[in-house]
Image (cartoon, rainbow, N blue to C red; front, side, top):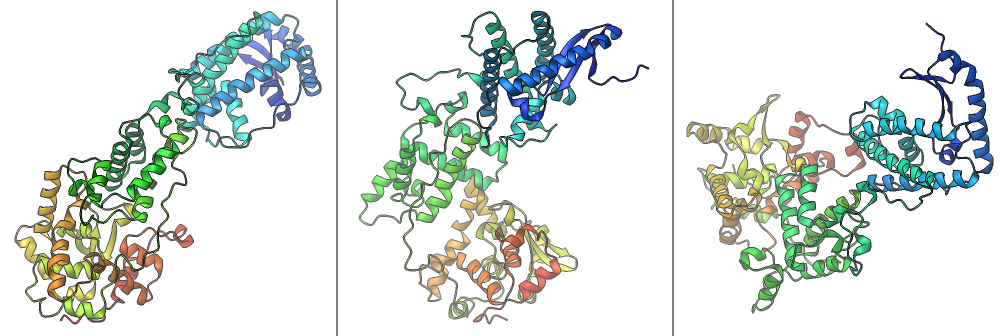
Length: 563
């Protein structure tokens, strides 16, 4: 076997002289390495190798001395479409600089060398662009360009990842465009136009379109409905969150009166939408069926006593937040140059009273007084579970009997059905008070009766309401039944008429009891299904069931005297 010779490359039976370009000059020369063909005879190749290396060294030194320095490197992050266009422009700028400096070809037969090099390189690039190249082949053909963008801090991709492979295919196609422009320039034509989709707009906007500058790619023509579909598919959002996006897009389109391409949605549209929401009645579709958002606002204002309108918190945290997420996705995917919803908020007026408050000890004495009699039915057990487990109405209604089981010897509720979000799926140890009140016997009786859920009638009514309304999520329907009976009938019957005190106050009372018992926030968050935003949450990923059981049994409710 012949010994390996430095700077000599054997590629498919043909020999080349190869010399690496110093990192500081790669942006000037436009390559990571220089190649000179030496033919197919190894002895002849060895004889011409020193002269070829000397010529390449001269090329590098001339570039160091004579080619003007390129513009300052980009340090800002770039999206894939921006990377493609930047690479195309940079390559042509370097080609221009080399031609102006007289450094284009230094070999004895420049035309033959150019055609031989470009021909082989074209085949390699075409293979990469078509997705038929291996990782090593892609890296050899276009990896130098990707490395340059990584070094400048424009992108952060891992070699071999799907993102890297996609970028390699794109840049290989762009490099083929660069070679085509170079061929045209060699023939004296400097007016060539690119054909790669990343470099042209397939549907150029009309010259009189005031939004023309915002149309930066074909995806700019997407509607919000189409953006929403792609966003939800990528994110795999829960049904509840998906429903919020559906509602937000429907409401926005009702407000502007059409399904508009996203590039034609202005910041003024979002601001006006936000202002309109401050006049929109809560549940306007139920209160004013078959009316659009503007019609609902008009109908509500015509009432002698208008219905309550959306709060600033709901507008900001739900509708404007969802809208901004869709526009952010559009920016990241090169469909928009900026987010027209960024920073649009409704200034909240500080409320004089809390929208919801806990039940006081006197309230609990009234709730669990003489009206609250054994044997407990579905209504009574639902109140008890909501107070001692802190579950939301939709979570309580869906608890399956199979989700009430012993884990490590501790009886628990597993909240694992259709929940608000992933943080809501959790384990809640059953409080000792519920065990003493006989919840295990109640579960056993339900099993004997062939039931599947802890609250079978409540669950059945919620599902039927969902099917009648053809809505995507159950969360909207469960509060219509036991919680409404509790709010409208039961609380007034025991003398509680404060409108701030509702079924959800049971959950608030549970959370407050955890805090008063000294339960640390991270544990309280796990029991209530809240996302922990503290720094400690980064390091704390699990809490033992024993710790959760100890914490939940620490809570007591003053005024609760049910035995």
